Image 1 (cartoon, rainbow, N blue to C red):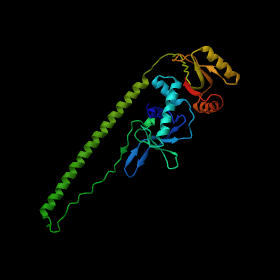
Image 2 (cartoon, one colour; image 1 turned 180 degrees about the vertical axis):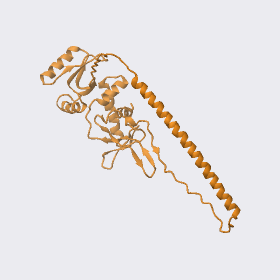
Image 3 (spheres, rainbow, N blue to C red; image 1 turned 60 degrees about the vertical axis):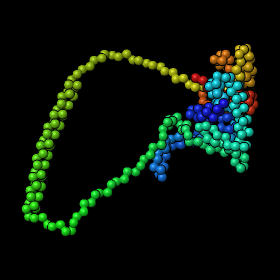
Image 4 (spheres, rainbow, N blue to C red; image 1 turned 90 degrees about the horizontal axis):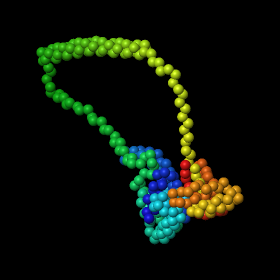
Length: 298
């Protein structure tokens, strides 16, 4: 099982993906940058890092694998556990290469070190964008026409011819400019008059649509909820028994209803945001059920 590919998939949607009993891969926003030496713009991205201290199962990875492989949640947890055992053995003798994520190895102090890969950008809004080079435009030097110190002075005839040529060209240019100015003035006046007539016609037009009915639309936005799952049962009576037990302990327990696998999930409680759900999950895993996990639904 290519566990790294499932982690990579989740990093497009989440900033933290935990591999139970191993650690968490984190994605931090990195703004666009300009490399002055290479004259290159780099688009915004997610800078990946690894934290070996965040190891508790939040259910996110197992749920994703369960859905992708069409297996139960418990089977997905077992597959992750087997992979972690393999990584734990492998890292003692060699570097672990995780596709689209990076490399993990042990330092001289036997601490896990993560070297991120730049092969893929996990920032969803920048996915597919590549660096852009911005080369500086070099201006060309003006061409200098060499002059000869030995050139002879022009004769009087050529001097007069040059003066008359300049006068003729200047006169012709003045006449052309004057005619063009008159033409442009006439054109502007014509356009202004046409615009004025159009506005006058529009102001005289009367549109009577009568009294229009008021239209009221009530839109209910579905809010995402996060459930901490205590267990799932094929027999509904077992689900009801667990729900009653949890309620006696003070939990706002409930049965979510039959899912596509024919199971009745039972939740400890529900939350409107993931942060609160994860916080409560940590407490429940320590005190009540270490296999509890989070289920997201609308």
